[in-house]
Image 1 (spheres, one colour):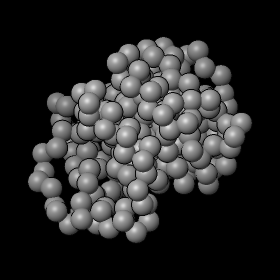
Image 2 (cartoon, one colour):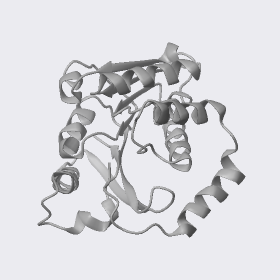
Image 3 (cartoon, rainbow, N blue to C red):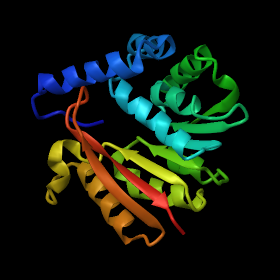
Image 4 (cartoon, one colour):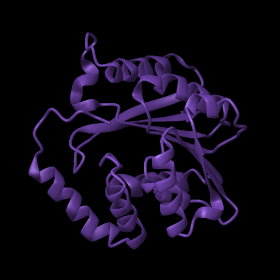
Length: 224
């Protein structure tokens, strides 16, 4: 989660609405998932609809048959990713909070995707140690302090060609603050350093603005 310190530019949200109206359309399952999340008291920190569709398309472009998600929340991004899988595909998603995991399971089932999704509850680093790869696509959107460790596990569970996407890496520009006392910012900076130092990864990061304000994604390809 990003602590929003900068004011929202209404044009950013307006453009997201334009994208949604023209390219995304109505999605009953995703709308119901957001409503269930709100009713369950979950924070409004899901990816935006446009970002969710981007993840879906990236997973399809990767030809993913197995997807790993670290950080489930209420399953909004999980649904978009699971829809990218073929009928015999499999998605594993990790969530530390049992209440959130229960809501996610219900949302995933309501979307008709329970047969291809497994929600594992518990600290992600513990769960990751038990998993076997390879996964073709990994989406990381959990506690930012552990991002570098999550990517290390993602590489272990990968194959050449695996795509890794990490959310919330710009943090309203605060990633530039080397002296920040915020452990999430320091964790994000460690992520950049670890990815830059790993010869198996080819990576970039992109800034985004929209309904979720100013943030961005790190994208990496396992090349060796």
